[in-house]
Structure formats: structure tokens, C-alpha cells
Image 1 (cartoon, rainbow, N blue to C red):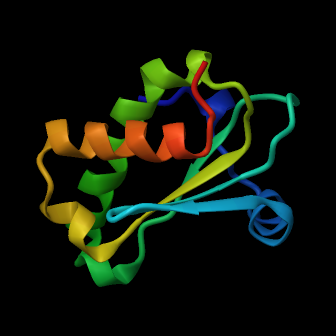
Image 2: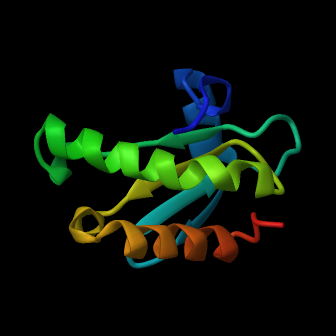
Length: 110
């Protein structure tokens, strides 16, 4: 799991990243990030299109579990991952592969 100090929580932080950040997309994820070296924080947004609260929370827990070992390898912090509707059908291995792919598209991994 992502540690609490590595999670975006404030609404203002989310708005700044959405408005001023760089956007990257692949088949299953949208990535928004600010190329700054000030802290490494990750935000996850899962919409109601993914199903009820149980399904949304399961997807968030999986993404957090994948991102936890990747946070020290990030070049920049302050990123937001938004899974697309078909991402909840992926198993853990494919989900991890897609997250690493989108992070490489943004050139975020060392």
C-alpha cells in the first residue's frame, strides 16, 4: 500500500495537477503529472463508471499495491492515475504492466 505521506489528498493539489500538468494516455489509464522534484505523491481517481463502492475500492487497492514499490523509482512526484472503464477487467499482472507502461510513456521511472 502507498504510505500516507505518499498520497495526494488535498483538492487543491488535484486541481493544480489537472490544470497545469502533463497528460499521457494509454488503453487503460490516463496519467497527469507535474514535472517537479518537490515530494513524490500519487493520487488515484476511480469514477462511478467502474461499479459500486466495493469494485472501485478493490481497483484502488490494487493500484496502490502496484505503486508502492514504484514510488522510490519515480523521477518526479505529484502524479494522478485515472483508470479507464476497461481497466477493472484486468488481472493484477496486466494492471501492473499497464501502469508501468504509462509511467514509461511519461518518462517518470528512473
